[in-house]
Image (tube, rainbow, N blue to C red):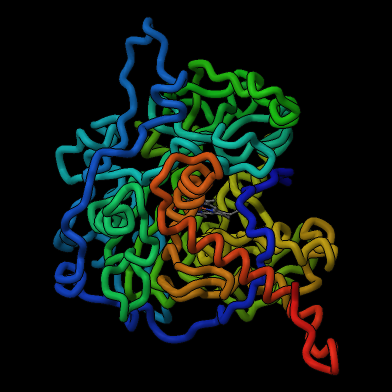
Length: 508
Ligand code: HEC
């Protein structure tokens, strides 16, 4: 099991209430390109976002570094670029999902890597089409216990630090912690939506993902992301990582999060080291999906057929919904299975790969809650779509375990995933892309956790007490939000309690 704590950005007062089971087709939510273009803000400022952690403030490469330095591709288009004849559109859908999930996933991988492999994923050099990155990941705090900002993009490839994988997670020989470093690249239609939110880089408007206020706050159909996940794991620790794509990256010298997090900050020192491509995540907005999105993943297997590391990536699964009505006890017989995947009809799992990856010396478990799809370096209490459906501003807990009510209900997915389904299943709903997950959120980020996290990173610096003016409008909204959330909770406690002369008691 991955003993990994996930992100810190938990809304302190967040009470989750959501209408997660949404029926109907994602198609109903679509705003067409002409309307988006007509209403799009066009006078936008570009080129202002930092590229990497502490750029210009001590995070720069040393003078003897001769390699390439990462630059954020941030010239987001101000009109929606036309849709292409995307290869995944050739695959028909039946009952909400593709008739051939393996072929669909392959089409996503082909599109996401075309021209990018040749460019070494310095995507601004792609000769086939334009690619971009999300802003505000240079100053990032993804992992709950990490020090503020320290997970931010490194300078070689712009990778951010993600989950630390505890010993014995991948296989018998991996006895120490290994770190994950990752980066996501978005296509032009996705970039248009990001560019609308950040039209004024000093005053982001999360509600402008779709310029049409009468529509869902959604990205245009055909929006696409490819995310590469690298690990510091070596072949000695994980035999199947042999021949994996290897990159240099400016990563932590100390691999153990326990040691780093005890501080001081100098324990987060970074130095050039090697990371290996272990997982590829893909995410596409396809209006044929009941949620509006499909998320899929590949894992690296050095024993697979193929001449290049890219060809040795094995498809693990694809998800277009969470099957919100299937409780844990219905799909799995106990905390460590076995699970009946047939019950989960809104996903495809490569069962052969599940078996191969769990055969000694390997020890992978890349499935999430109740047998739903998650990745080898993801949290097994969750699922791809489970975490991503929560994306919005402010961020809310992405897992039942991270929510404040978890402590009261004593949730523990490792021992008793089958209990407290009325809370747990909230995290396995089918939120329609562009609508909010929880009524404690102001804006949907349409399944984009990088957008949600970037906004959180933005406010953490720009709304701080000592931040230099002008104060972004989001800070005021956040202040009001916090007061009203507190008031709503206070009111629950005094509701019906008589005050002076029997009048209703006012919350403080
Ligand atoms: C435990 C929660 C969790 C699970 C499970 C999860 N993700 Fe994510 N994912 C995140 C967070 C948080 C981010 C944003 C930060 C980042 O990029 O590291 C993210 C980022 C991404 C991105 C970059 C674009 C975006 O939306 O931010 C893609 C693509 C992605 N995930 C795909 C997947 C796929 C495919 C799966 C399942 C195989 C998956 N994720 C499982 C939490 C999760």
